[in-house]
Image (cartoon, rainbow, N blue to C red; front, side, top):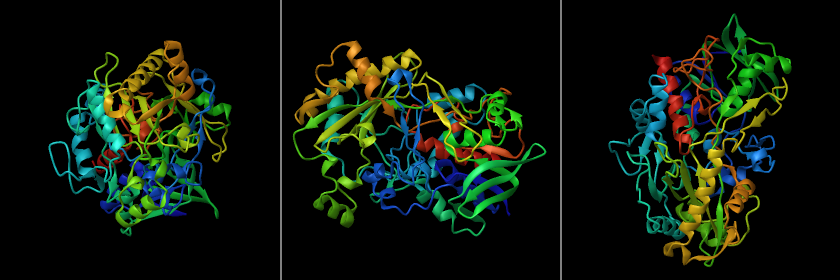
Length: 520
C-alpha cells in the first residue's frame, strides 16, 4: 500500500506534463506506467521509431475487421514506454486549426478556445526559431527544424508550389493552409519525447514517484469516490491510494478500458462482460475518431532516400554529428488543403523520402518516396469495448473507418492530388515510376479500390472519453468524470472532435490544462 495526493495512470504525452506540473506544486504524486524506461536507442534515433513497432514497447493493438477497408484488421501501434507514443511517433509538431478549439468552447467547454489554449501551447514550447506572437521559448519541449532536410522533401514542397498551392513556413501561426517542411520535437538531432521534455526533469523531485512495469487493473472506488488505483507487476497486485484525486492519462484506448473495468461505462455492456456497474456512463468508449491515411508511392532514380540510412557513412554521420538520414523524422514535409466546403483544411499531406507501406513492414528495400494524403476532418465514429472483464485482455477496437461516405470521397480526391504533385517538374525529375497505385489506376472506382486496399491508421485515436456539458458526457470541461468524485481523465480521449493535425501537441496541452484545473 502506497499513499499520494495524486495518482496518475499513464506516462504518455499528457501524463508526463501532468506529473511535472502537479509535482511542481509540492503535492505528492505517483505516476504508474505499464511500460518500461525509454532506454532503447530506437526511442532516441529519430528515423528508427518504426523499429519499436510490435516490440515490448508497443501495446500492439489491432482493430476488428473493417468492412469499408476490405475487412482488414488495422494495426495500431501505441507506446508502452515512458513518454508513451511520443517515444515512438514521427515527432511532427502540429497544434491544429483554431476552428476546432473554438468549436469545443462554443459547445459549452469553457476554457478550451484557441485563445485559451495558445498560451498553454507556448508555455510548453522551446521554439528553436525564437519567440513570436505564436511561439514560446524556455518550455521543456524542444521544437526545431530538421537538421538535415532530404532534397526529395524540399522538392516535394517546390512541387506543391508548382501545382498552385501556397508555401507555408509555419503551420502553427495564424495560417494553416499551404505546404512546407514540418517542425519536429527534436533536441540536437535526438527525439525530445514528453518523457525527455517534462518527466525526467521532474523526477529529480522527491515528491514524484514513477513506477514502471505497473499495469493498472482498476480504479478503486469508495462511496462513489475514486480512492486509488489497483495495479499489477511481476511481484503481484498492489494498491496506491490517492488522498486527493486519480487521473487517467492512458490515452484513447486504455483510459476508457480502465474506466469500464472499474464499473464506469455503458451499464448494459458492462453487465454483458460481468463487470459490476458503479456508474452508468453510456458514452465511455464511444466517439472513437482516428486519422486515416492512404499513400501514393513512387520509385526514385537516385540513391538519396532513407533506404540508405543504416549504411556505414550515414551511421557515422549520425553518431558523430547527429545529422544525416538517421536524424530524419521520416514524415519530413507536408501541408494542408481544403478539398471540401468546411471551415478548415480537411486533408493533410505527409511526405516521406522513403517507402512507408503497411507501417514499413511491406516496404521495398529500393529507393522510393511516399506521398500520403491524410483524412483530418473525420466524419466516421467508432467505439472501444471490453472483450472481457480480464484487465490484461486487449479491448475491442472498432473505428468504423469510412462508415461516412464523405470520408471516402476526401481520401480519393487526396490521392488524385498526390499524383498531381508527383507530376510537377520539381519532383518528377527524380521519379522512375509510380509504385502505388500504378498508372493503370485512372477511374474513380480504381481510386476507391486503392483507398480501401492501402489505407492505414496515422496513429491518432481520440475522443473516447469526450468532454461536454451534457449529463451523459464522460467528463466535464475541467476533465472531471461525471458520476464519480475524485476522478479525472486527461489525454487525447477527452477531445469531443479530432484536431485536424498531428495530436501530440494538443495531448500535452491537455495534461497542462488538467493541472491548471486542479490548481484552481
